[in-house]
Image (cartoon, rainbow, N blue to C red; front, side):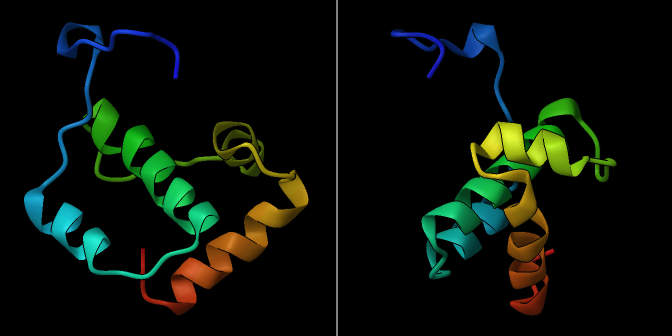
Length: 82
């Protein structure tokens, strides 16, 4: 994390409770969860419902190899997490 003492004043991502509850009940791998959290940050975190997020943005934001981004996105889509 960027700060030793995170504060709401530094920014936050408002996520609907039903999404958080669904994520809590979904068995995701660590990478899948990071992908979903990154997606939520890039959309809801900027008050957007959708956004064009490049593979390189995902790779950097989730700390995975760019070649693996497409595979992880396909896994999430196959599990109807979109």
